[in-house]
Amino acid sequence: MEVITPTAPALIIFIIAIIIMAIIYRKWAASIESYVVAKRAASPWLNGLALFSTYNSAWAVLGGPGVCYSYGIVEFATFIGWAIGVFIILWYYLPIIRDLGAKYGATGLASYMEAYYGKRYVGIIAGIIAWYATLFYLVGQIKGIGLVLSYGLGISYDTAALSGVIIALIYLTLSGLRAVLFVDALCTLIMMTFCFCSLYLLFALGGGNIFNTINTMYRFDPRTIYPTGEPYTTDPITLWVFSTIVYSMWQFTPYAWQNYLALRSSKKTDLSIFVTLATVSGAFITWVSILGPVGRVFLPYKLKDPDTVVLEVSKYFLPSLYPIFICGLFATVLATLDSALLAASTDLYHAIKGLIKPLETRIGGVNTLRIILIGTSFLVCYFAIVYMPVYMVYTMLIGMTGVSAALTGPLAVGLKWRKDPLAAITSLIISLIAAQLLVFYGITPWLTGCFVGLILSAIIYIIVTLARSH
Image: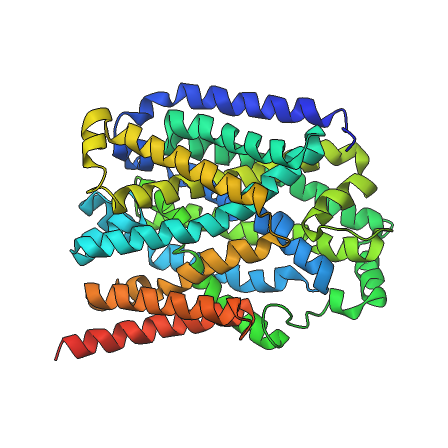
């Protein structure tokens, strides 16, 4: 694979800046609370910028366009619901999560649920499930890192994937969430530059008129403009309705909890900044996702791996801006990879605290968590290299969307209705299993399966709670 000369220096400078930032903030790793939730002192501005890039994962900029390329579906249709979900959940639930989290001393999803429901088994089960589901998500992220670095540096996919994991581990192990927040905020600024380049490309293909680009795509294949529903749901209306509901619960996904719990305030005047910055990311995904159909129409060759469509389109049509595309894509994926790795490791650490107590006593809680973080990282890297998925969108979303939908009962219902630990775990496990079976056995499209899991989670929680109260 040829090396685009200006790309390597740009990436190297970005990576050096990240490592310097991690060294500066290494003092924030003195305790579990400071390491994992940054002493609960993060400003809404910083947190909002960080969450912007955290949400815009390899799925948004590589996996989604890859599905668009193959099926002719405009992926951003689903993000109409996603943007609504960001606003509803963060505005309505985030003050509750942040305030109760500070009260209980929660450091992640698992510890929060254990403290809220008052039962150790809730934390154990929730932690293991969150870790397991995040593994699926991380496989997709690491594939994204591998693709971007292999294109940008001219190295093999295996070497690139491993290098990306090591880069993330350097600042994760040094400084924890504090470094993650600043790295992800920096990534947001790079991503916005990438976004404008994507927009420029859409104008350039139409001779300076984006509508010419869209008309060309439509004349080639109407499905590039009007989604047929495959492989998400059976029809477009169902697609938009289900995505609105399912993506609302996406905000409960495990990898975002450190950001929520790290906020220094839950005042709505502060949260308005946080919510606004997070919601705007839907517009970013819109432009990037259109590049999938652009590749389907304008590229003169067929791609072997659909997840490479954005890389190929930018390389073919905008070689002068290719380094910016590479850095933007790398920043996007890295910002989600680091948050997901930290969240998964934190949840597993909390779930198995009883088993690893001797080790924790010997080397301390932070170092124990670091060992779990490193082990999780290389485990996922192995699967991303040996069992690289054809579509990262499936490995990422079936795991993470499935578990976030299954959390509807314990969180969306439980936080505003009644506490019932047995109902929380029952609804979580049964709905998650049901959604996985529906999708993996091809009974329903994945979005439909997750929607069923969401509804099932809420119903089971209510039924169990009512049955136990009589």
